[in-house]
Length: 256
Image 1: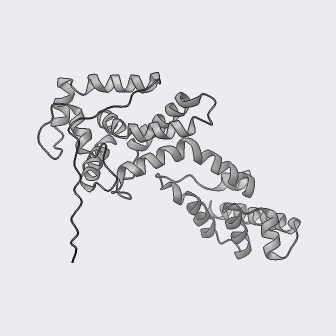
Image 2: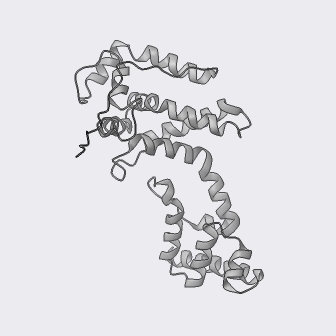
């Protein structure tokens, strides 16, 4: 009989921060090196009541928040969660979380930079800018676990995916239809964004065919494919979409 042993996450005792040719990365790391040992900063962080003993260097905070460990590290995840809660109203906490996320953010920029006009530096700047926003506005009540992976994914989505996704929808649905969809009052999970758009449309009592056409277009199906499945010509599908847009506009006016 074999027995299974529990997997133990061994936390690093020191951190090797990213290096490279990017001046932006170097600036962030140099800034962190100075910040992490500043007495006034350490007094502030030690006054936050975070789990564990007092820290003598902010690298210790990163280690406790799961730096260098897998996403399955639940202890680090909850420590990071406490930092993110504070980050909503504290720029120092935001800066600490940003440093915690720096390696995967660099990986995103390395991938996306291959397509960006300004290369890695442009992609990294956009990624870090979005990461800062996502940290400050993280939906604490809705997503209390997998903090690091959620923030990294959100940063990439809002920096590089969301605008192109909405442009695709605008082509499929029509610009006026997209403009009629209200902006959510709170941040939503990126995977749920298209679902939310369609959920709003369904609340407006659209006909089954209209809602179906919008759903299929949102899923990326072409007019020709929809026509083939329905046994009609492409012109008919365009007509169905026009009807759906008219219904959306009418329902919005009634709602207003």
